[in-house]
Image 1: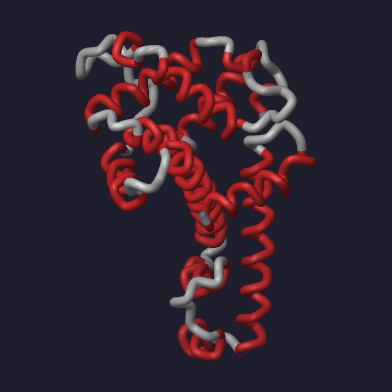
Image 2: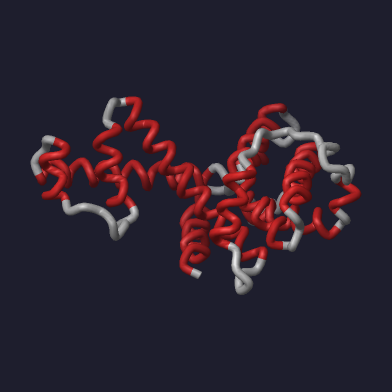
Length: 225
Protein backbone atom coordinates (compact mmCIF):
# COMPACT_ATOMS: atom_id res chain seq x y z
CA UNK A 1 0.00 0.00 0.00
CA UNK A 2 1.20 3.51 -0.71
CA UNK A 3 0.01 4.49 2.75
CA UNK A 4 2.57 2.09 4.20
CA UNK A 5 5.47 3.86 2.55
CA UNK A 6 5.74 6.45 5.35
CA UNK A 7 4.30 4.69 8.39
CA UNK A 8 5.11 7.39 10.97
CA UNK A 9 4.00 10.48 9.08
CA UNK A 10 0.78 12.45 8.87
CA UNK A 11 0.95 11.87 5.13
CA UNK A 12 0.44 8.16 5.68
CA UNK A 13 -2.67 8.75 7.76
CA UNK A 14 -4.12 11.10 5.17
CA UNK A 15 -3.45 8.55 2.44
CA UNK A 16 -5.15 5.85 4.51
CA UNK A 17 -8.12 8.12 5.24
CA UNK A 18 -8.51 8.73 1.52
CA UNK A 19 -8.50 4.99 0.86
CA UNK A 20 -11.06 4.37 3.60
CA UNK A 21 -13.28 7.15 2.30
CA UNK A 22 -13.13 5.64 -1.17
CA UNK A 23 -13.51 1.97 -0.31
CA UNK A 24 -16.07 1.97 2.50
CA UNK A 25 -18.88 0.40 0.37
CA UNK A 26 -17.38 -3.12 0.40
CA UNK A 27 -16.91 -2.87 4.17
CA UNK A 28 -20.54 -1.87 4.66
CA UNK A 29 -21.70 -4.68 2.36
CA UNK A 30 -19.58 -7.17 4.31
CA UNK A 31 -21.01 -5.98 7.63
CA UNK A 32 -24.59 -6.15 6.36
CA UNK A 33 -24.07 -9.65 4.92
CA UNK A 34 -23.20 -10.81 8.43
CA UNK A 35 -26.89 -10.33 9.25
CA UNK A 36 -26.34 -7.06 11.10
CA UNK A 37 -29.33 -4.66 10.83
CA UNK A 38 -28.87 -1.53 8.75
CA UNK A 39 -28.65 1.03 11.56
CA UNK A 40 -26.21 -1.13 13.52
CA UNK A 41 -24.21 -1.75 10.33
CA UNK A 42 -23.89 1.99 9.74
CA UNK A 43 -22.57 2.52 13.26
CA UNK A 44 -20.28 -0.49 13.00
CA UNK A 45 -18.82 0.72 9.70
CA UNK A 46 -18.05 4.18 11.08
CA UNK A 47 -16.67 2.72 14.31
CA UNK A 48 -14.52 0.23 12.41
CA UNK A 49 -12.79 2.98 10.45
CA UNK A 50 -12.26 4.99 13.62
CA UNK A 51 -10.73 1.90 15.21
CA UNK A 52 -8.59 1.29 12.14
CA UNK A 53 -7.25 4.83 11.93
CA UNK A 54 -6.49 4.95 15.65
CA UNK A 55 -4.61 1.65 15.63
CA UNK A 56 -1.16 0.77 14.34
CA UNK A 57 -2.79 -0.15 11.05
CA UNK A 58 0.33 0.44 8.96
CA UNK A 59 2.49 -1.85 11.06
CA UNK A 60 -0.11 -4.62 11.06
CA UNK A 61 -0.67 -4.56 7.30
CA UNK A 62 0.56 -7.60 5.41
CA UNK A 63 3.85 -6.31 4.03
CA UNK A 64 4.45 -9.44 1.97
CA UNK A 65 1.26 -8.96 0.00
CA UNK A 66 0.79 -5.27 0.61
CA UNK A 67 -2.78 -5.19 -0.66
CA UNK A 68 -5.19 -2.83 1.00
CA UNK A 69 -8.13 -4.92 -0.23
CA UNK A 70 -6.93 -8.02 1.62
CA UNK A 71 -5.88 -6.02 4.66
CA UNK A 72 -9.24 -4.28 4.91
CA UNK A 73 -11.22 -7.51 4.57
CA UNK A 74 -9.14 -9.23 7.24
CA UNK A 75 -9.36 -6.23 9.54
CA UNK A 76 -13.14 -5.81 9.39
CA UNK A 77 -13.61 -9.57 9.81
CA UNK A 78 -11.49 -9.54 12.97
CA UNK A 79 -13.25 -6.41 14.19
CA UNK A 80 -16.68 -8.00 13.97
CA UNK A 81 -15.48 -11.14 15.72
CA UNK A 82 -14.29 -9.03 18.66
CA UNK A 83 -17.82 -7.97 19.67
CA UNK A 84 -18.42 -4.93 17.53
CA UNK A 85 -21.34 -3.79 19.73
CA UNK A 86 -18.96 -3.14 22.62
CA UNK A 87 -16.45 -1.37 20.40
CA UNK A 88 -19.02 0.92 18.76
CA UNK A 89 -20.11 2.32 22.14
CA UNK A 90 -23.30 0.42 21.28
CA UNK A 91 -25.95 3.11 21.23
CA UNK A 92 -27.37 4.50 18.01
CA UNK A 93 -26.01 8.03 17.73
CA UNK A 94 -23.18 7.25 20.11
CA UNK A 95 -20.73 6.23 17.43
CA UNK A 96 -18.37 8.95 16.27
CA UNK A 97 -18.73 9.78 12.59
CA UNK A 98 -15.37 10.36 10.93
CA UNK A 99 -16.61 10.19 7.36
CA UNK A 100 -19.69 11.50 5.62
CA UNK A 101 -20.89 8.31 3.96
CA UNK A 102 -23.90 7.86 1.70
CA UNK A 103 -25.40 4.88 3.46
CA UNK A 104 -28.60 5.14 1.42
CA UNK A 105 -26.55 4.39 -1.70
CA UNK A 106 -24.61 1.70 0.16
CA UNK A 107 -27.84 0.00 1.24
CA UNK A 108 -29.25 0.18 -2.28
CA UNK A 109 -26.11 -1.46 -3.65
CA UNK A 110 -26.25 -4.10 -0.94
CA UNK A 111 -29.86 -5.01 -1.67
CA UNK A 112 -29.10 -5.25 -5.40
CA UNK A 113 -26.13 -7.59 -4.96
CA UNK A 114 -26.76 -9.64 -1.84
CA UNK A 115 -28.26 -13.10 -2.21
CA UNK A 116 -28.41 -16.22 -0.09
CA UNK A 117 -25.72 -17.88 -2.20
CA UNK A 118 -23.20 -15.04 -1.82
CA UNK A 119 -20.86 -15.14 1.15
CA UNK A 120 -19.81 -11.96 2.98
CA UNK A 121 -16.32 -12.36 1.54
CA UNK A 122 -17.58 -12.75 -2.02
CA UNK A 123 -19.82 -9.72 -1.63
CA UNK A 124 -16.91 -7.68 -0.28
CA UNK A 125 -14.70 -8.65 -3.23
CA UNK A 126 -17.42 -7.87 -5.78
CA UNK A 127 -18.32 -4.53 -4.23
CA UNK A 128 -14.60 -3.65 -4.04
CA UNK A 129 -14.16 -4.34 -7.74
CA UNK A 130 -17.27 -2.38 -8.71
CA UNK A 131 -16.24 0.54 -6.52
CA UNK A 132 -12.79 0.65 -8.09
CA UNK A 133 -14.20 0.55 -11.61
CA UNK A 134 -16.74 3.26 -10.83
CA UNK A 135 -14.04 5.47 -9.32
CA UNK A 136 -12.05 5.01 -12.52
CA UNK A 137 -15.00 6.01 -14.69
CA UNK A 138 -15.76 9.01 -12.46
CA UNK A 139 -12.19 10.28 -12.75
CA UNK A 140 -12.17 9.78 -16.51
CA UNK A 141 -15.49 11.58 -16.86
CA UNK A 142 -14.16 14.48 -14.80
CA UNK A 143 -11.13 14.77 -17.08
CA UNK A 144 -13.30 14.93 -20.17
CA UNK A 145 -15.63 17.44 -18.52
CA UNK A 146 -12.64 19.66 -17.69
CA UNK A 147 -11.77 19.71 -21.40
CA UNK A 148 -15.39 20.39 -22.43
CA UNK A 149 -15.58 16.94 -24.01
CA UNK A 150 -18.35 15.58 -21.82
CA UNK A 151 -20.64 14.94 -24.77
CA UNK A 152 -17.95 12.81 -26.38
CA UNK A 153 -17.38 10.89 -23.17
CA UNK A 154 -21.08 10.20 -22.63
CA UNK A 155 -21.40 8.93 -26.21
CA UNK A 156 -18.40 6.60 -25.94
CA UNK A 157 -18.50 5.48 -22.30
CA UNK A 158 -20.38 2.27 -23.15
CA UNK A 159 -17.52 1.31 -25.51
CA UNK A 160 -15.00 1.30 -22.67
CA UNK A 161 -16.37 -1.90 -21.12
CA UNK A 162 -18.08 -3.19 -24.28
CA UNK A 163 -21.54 -2.57 -22.83
CA UNK A 164 -24.18 -4.34 -24.89
CA UNK A 165 -26.16 -1.10 -25.09
CA UNK A 166 -23.38 0.75 -26.91
CA UNK A 167 -24.23 2.32 -30.25
CA UNK A 168 -22.18 1.55 -33.37
CA UNK A 169 -19.69 4.27 -34.19
CA UNK A 170 -21.47 4.99 -37.46
CA UNK A 171 -24.64 5.91 -35.58
CA UNK A 172 -22.78 8.48 -33.49
CA UNK A 173 -21.50 10.55 -36.39
CA UNK A 174 -24.46 12.93 -36.57
CA UNK A 175 -24.69 13.28 -32.79
CA UNK A 176 -21.01 14.12 -32.39
CA UNK A 177 -20.43 15.86 -35.71
CA UNK A 178 -17.45 13.62 -36.38
CA UNK A 179 -16.47 11.08 -38.99
CA UNK A 180 -16.55 7.40 -38.11
CA UNK A 181 -12.75 7.18 -38.27
CA UNK A 182 -12.40 10.16 -35.93
CA UNK A 183 -14.83 8.57 -33.48
CA UNK A 184 -12.87 5.29 -33.56
CA UNK A 185 -9.67 7.18 -32.77
CA UNK A 186 -11.40 9.03 -29.94
CA UNK A 187 -12.68 5.72 -28.55
CA UNK A 188 -9.19 4.23 -28.63
CA UNK A 189 -7.83 7.22 -26.70
CA UNK A 190 -10.66 6.91 -24.18
CA UNK A 191 -9.99 3.21 -23.62
CA UNK A 192 -6.26 3.82 -23.27
CA UNK A 193 -6.79 6.55 -20.69
CA UNK A 194 -9.29 4.34 -18.85
CA UNK A 195 -6.70 1.58 -18.54
CA UNK A 196 -4.10 4.08 -17.33
CA UNK A 197 -6.39 5.42 -14.62
CA UNK A 198 -7.47 1.92 -13.60
CA UNK A 199 -3.90 0.77 -13.16
CA UNK A 200 -3.10 3.91 -11.15
CA UNK A 201 -6.10 3.27 -8.90
CA UNK A 202 -4.94 -0.28 -8.31
CA UNK A 203 -1.37 0.89 -7.70
CA UNK A 204 -2.69 3.04 -4.86
CA UNK A 205 -3.93 -0.09 -3.07
CA UNK A 206 -0.93 -2.40 -3.49
CA UNK A 207 2.62 -2.22 -2.24
CA UNK A 208 4.39 -2.93 -5.52
CA UNK A 209 3.81 -2.30 -9.20
CA UNK A 210 4.55 -5.98 -9.71
CA UNK A 211 1.24 -6.75 -7.97
CA UNK A 212 -0.95 -4.67 -10.29
CA UNK A 213 -1.62 -7.29 -12.95
CA UNK A 214 -2.38 -10.03 -10.43
CA UNK A 215 -4.65 -7.72 -8.48
CA UNK A 216 -6.47 -6.80 -11.68
CA UNK A 217 -7.02 -10.49 -12.47
CA UNK A 218 -8.46 -11.09 -9.01
CA UNK A 219 -10.81 -8.13 -9.40
CA UNK A 220 -12.07 -9.44 -12.73
CA UNK A 221 -12.56 -12.87 -11.17
CA UNK A 222 -14.66 -11.29 -8.43
CA UNK A 223 -16.93 -9.76 -11.05
CA UNK A 224 -17.28 -12.94 -13.07
CA UNK A 225 -18.02 -15.18 -10.12
